[in-house]
Structures are given as structure tokens and as C-alpha cells.
Length: 436
Image 1 (cartoon, rainbow, N blue to C red):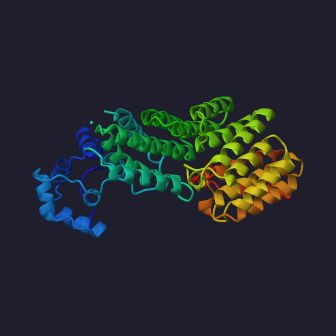
Image 2 (image 1 turned 180 degrees about the horizontal axis):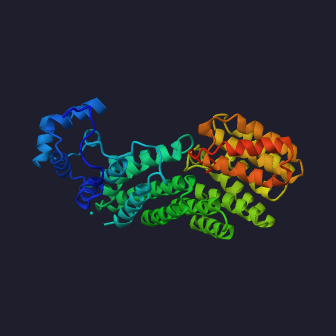
Image 3 (image 1 turned 90 degrees about the vertical axis):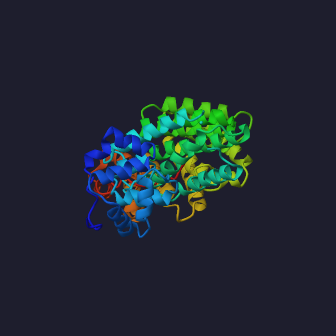
């Protein structure tokens, strides 16, 4: 059999109950036997792995695996075996490997099922290989790395990495560590689950995001850390806010997140106070909105340098001014909003394209609300034309459409026609929500 040709395993075989079980149990012996069943010899699998990955998977290794004399533990060996068998993405996900495609959601409905399965596994994991101190530190650093990556990595790509590592983390959680290490590992698990919730919100999968939020809260309860509990609950509030239509519930959840923070000031408290302000502004509660902005500003003033770094786990003045400007825009306070927006643009680096674009769209919305329709449309079009396709994210598309709808009664104006035409051409749902 020519190793340049795909493995002969029928596509339907990957959904057979025995195969799904072998994937989720990481039973390499059963998988190699599956390949043999359809004529993929040791020689073929070895050659196919080398052809696709330039990595060695020797015939002797395959023989030992097939005879049950060795277990596959290393990630690179699993990658080579998966490549040799030409596993589809749904099989790779069940195995705990990242899919080869960045596409998630409607094009790959199996992802939802496997994400849900993984979430349930994590929720069940608080009870059975023991982790060391250095192992926990490695997990903590990994979570921080993913938190920073939310600023410049598309959510679909980042979700692949997070869920791949999550499979290993769940295995560690099944072992009861010494209480001190177990709490730290639960802390990491809560951050991971909260990140999955955030990324699913970015991908407009709000129900899944909120289910992962519940799992994050379970892990945060085990960690017994009020600041973490507040941050996790803040992610729930953002999922509700971006889903739209139930801003009162978003306000309630944001307030609960602040209560969970206890007497200490933390990122979660600042983040949820800012969200409360935005949601209150949407429903017209000006006093509550301004009060919440004040609380967010006070909390921010107490945070240390690590808590204000650009990360999903941080909060800084650039984000606060963006959130303040957004709230003031909804309240119709054009000049005050522009003051906050200018400050946000001064603070955000020019590389932070998404947040800067959202600030620009808020500015355009303020202009439109003040009756400067042509100026609003021209301003928005100018800023949107400066973006490339990757930078035209889900949120940018949604916000641009909101602006176009606001200007709908003025569609005869040339600038508004340009905005509507541009809106029709930027439907590129792919990138990061950077404002959180």
C-alpha cells in the first residue's frame, strides 16, 4: 500500500461505538488493530507517518502497540499515529488532539458534542496519576499563556489549543492530590473553563458558553478563591450581554460577580462592574451606569501590575475607558463619550486593532446619535477600510451592522450607502473579542 495515499479506514468507522470508546480511552492498541482491519500494515503506517509529519513512528513501535506491550503516552507519538491513520477532526478531538481545521461550530457540529462531553468529564473529575508541585506550576503558566494569547489569537485557533490541554488537565484532576495542590489545580481548571466560556462567547455560541461557565464555577468553588469566583462569574455576564435581549439578567449576574469578590478588589470585580455599567446604559439606567463606572475605576486603581497586563485575566485603563465610552455612547452623552474614547485610543497600542476599531465604532455611533449622520458614516467607513479581512471580526461585523441599522432612515446619503455596501462585504466571522 502506497504511504502517499490516505489510510483505507472508512469514514463511518470513526463514529462506531467501539472506535469512539477507543479514542476517548486513548486505547492505541485498539486503534492500530482498526487500521490493520482495513489493510493498513505496520509498513504502511510507519511510512504514512513519515510522509505526513516527517516524524518517526517505527514498525517496531507499531508492533509493540498492536501487541499491547507498550502504551502511547507522548503527544508527538499520538500526533504521528493520528496522521498515519488520517483521522478526521472529530476523531482527533475525541482523542484529545487539536483538529487540523480552524473551523468550528456549524461546519463541524461534532465539536459541540465533544466540547460538551469534555465539559462533563471535567465536572465529574473532582474524585481519581498524582501531580507534582512543578507540574502544577507548569499548568499555572500554561493558563497564563492562554490568557495573554486572547489578545492576539483568533478564538477558533485558541479554542483548539485550550481543549487539547484540557484533556490532560482533566486526567490530572481525577487524581486526589494533597489538598494544597488540589486547590491550585482546581484554580487552573476554573481559569481554563472560564477561557473556554469566553472563547465560545466570541464564537457566538452563547448557550455552550454559559454551560462552561457553570463548570468554571464548580472548579472555582473547589479552589475557594473569591477573586477567581468573581472573574468566572463575570464571564457569564459577558455571555449574556453579547447574546443580547436580556440585559437585566446581565446586570444581575454582573452584580453577583462583584459580590463574590468579597471585600477584596480584583480583576473580576472591575470587569463585572464595567459590564454592569454598559448593560445599565443600554436599558437607560443612567445613575446606575455612572455609579458602576465609578466602582470599576476605583477597583482598577487598587490592582497591581500583574493584574493590569493585557490578558483575559487582567484589566487596565485602556479597557476601562473603552467600556466607559461605550456606556456613555448608549446614554447619548456624546462629548463625555468622546473624551473617554480619545483616552482609550491613546492607551491602546496600534497593534490592538480590534479594541481600537470598537472604540471607533462607538465614536461613529455617538456622532449618529447627535444627528451628525454623514460624519458618522464617513468616520466608520474610513476606519473599517483600514482593516484587513482577518481584522474584520464577528464583533466588528455585528457592531457595524448595528450602526448601519441606526442610520437606516438616511440610506439615501452617499456615505451611508458606502457603509451599507461595506457592511455587506465584511462578513468574516473569525477573530478575537479583545475588549474583555
